[in-house]
Image 1 (cartoon, rainbow, N blue to C red):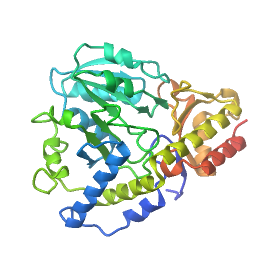
Image 2: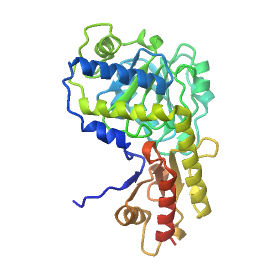
Image 3: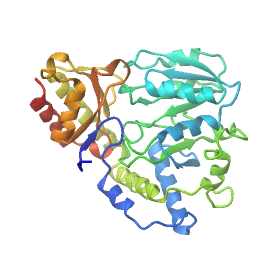
Image 4: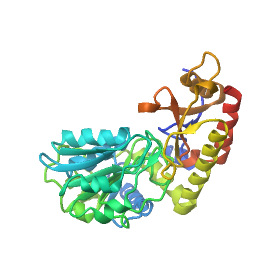
Length: 364
């Protein structure tokens, strides 16, 4: 394998902050060490600030973002529960799969990929669902779905939001918007390698926690006792110490910068990239008005490709010749478009200029 240090601008893991890399090299504490307990408390406090919530149960699930999704469903949804889920990309569809495996009756509300889901369509889909779920920032398409209207009109339903790509990159107000359950991942706008899934749960949702979820590892009945201090201060499984060092450092970098400053940085980089792509003859995939700045989806015109090269060949050239990794398209975009990430430490104007200059070199 050839060693390389690419600029990661795909939809997956992005380059970590230097402070995070340093944190991963710290000596490993035991997961029962009092200093580790203090670290966990600080991670919870920092996550509450970034989620913009007062929820006591706010912590990092000991696995990647998909485990956050599973934890959000298995603890609140069971056989016979009706769940309304918005689908306008891969991850909305994945939520349907997880909910169905919990035995829920899934009411699926679809919107064309690249367009936002109409909140009213979700609200009208069923008169009394147990839960309404939607992806805030759909990684497969680069589209943002609105949460505020759902929270204001959800009635007795719980509102669940996938915030894997939105947390730290665009405005997300858990308490103000009435979101009951939200999960994220570390590898996007938090600038931390994959391995943890930040999760926050409202007191309203905790009152509806299932007595015996379909997962022992993700059972919030046990985790809540540790995180909120309501029981013995001991985790029911061994915590990933170094990953928690990393998220502690990444959240620290984000909070030192300030949430508004981070949102503005991501927006400025996204605007510059999208304008540069349009100037070069590309067509943006996501609908105007709901485009994410941190994840740009774009069609690649055939006439821009050099003779004998596919879009995958161009991505391969960017990686091996220029040290830039971008992602291929999914769904309608598969083989026809790209997904370009500007998230966390990667959201720098120099990376925008680097990619656009490389494209000028490679493309017709």
